[in-house]
Image (tube, helix red, strand yellow):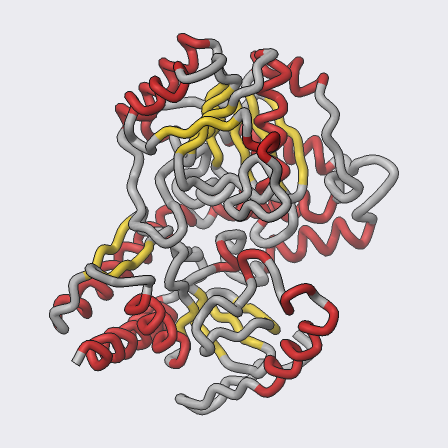
Amino acid sequence: MKQPLIRPPTGSRPRSVDADLRRRARAVIPGGMYGHQAAGPLPPEYPQFMRAGRGARIWDVDGNEYVDLMCSYGPVVLGHQHPAVEEAAAAQAELADCQNGPSAVMVDLAELLVRTVGHADWAMFAKNGTDATTTCVTIARAQTGRERILVATGAYHGSAPWCTPRLGGVTAADRVNIGHYTYNDLPSVVAAAAEGPEPAAIVVSPFKHDAGFDQELVDPAFARGLRSLCDRIGAALILDDVRCGFRLHLGSSWEPIGVQPDLSAWSKAIANGHALAAVLGSDRFRESARRIFVTGSFWFSAAPMAAAVATIRALREQDAIATMDRLGRDLRAGIMAQAAARGIEVNYTGPPAMPYLTFLGDRNHEQACAFAAAAMRHGVYLHPRHNWFISAAMTQADLGRALTGTEAAFAAVGEART
């Protein structure tokens, strides 16, 4: 890092550089910022612009330091600037990144993914989770000759017109072939499948992680029921592992419950922050995957693929999944003890490595925002309406500082209630 990282005195949270960047951004970027990283809807304690990251710590452009419990909304799984990953990406970039044809590392990565993920017989690559989920849907439609796609109500599968949660610029035709079911409710899926033409695919997340709501782990019987239903009606089972992949299991997230999808979508943690997505599938869908046309100028970039190879190897060598699970359990135990000590009722849901905190009786996330704002003031970056992420780089010192910040945040919530 060429510039030194600055840790200002406790309680000091300068914002002058961020404020100037926001002013400049408003003149040249619609709304000043867009998408899920727009800080405008968050409490004023949140910076819009970041400067650096190391391990489980991040710094904003004003030099304020935070323990990172968001991990760039999921991509950073081994910690920021993981040496092996960065060295692999840099070595490939020194040779070439974006070329007239892909590098040999594309084959290396595809082979590694097929060896690592139980249901995968082949792999294709793209850049973002939306690319991956949309490609899965396209393959399913090519395979079945059908149009309808079933998704869980409230689930997020990307920002393309067929799935975006915000409807500006979306036409009715974009959604006419989308049906909805209730997560963990198999009869609702059966009913949705029977409501219209037979579906090409059922898309499902490894667990329910709708933004702003308590998370819900999958019922294995529901997952098995989806598999049986897809087999019975000839639809593809698509697992959207974009958010969860390589955080819950070194394989697909449903391997521990013995359910294999036909197609799966991956991104986020696949390359520890480097821009990459993948579609994995079974042999039954290989020919349909070959027939469709999907591409992008940067989809074949070699440096992110080299980063992905290094990431998968490091996840295995460091036993990173178990580490994140253990750290997540310790964080949960500390936070729940803090809430109980103050008589504050909360729900702490989701897998240990991907938790989410809500406050009982909270209206419009008012208490969650007060909690998050106070945590930010005390050097802990988390989110009031989105699940958090634990990285394998978190140390006991990071965990201790995070819990110090959440203790102060609970105090702020308690004071606001009196």
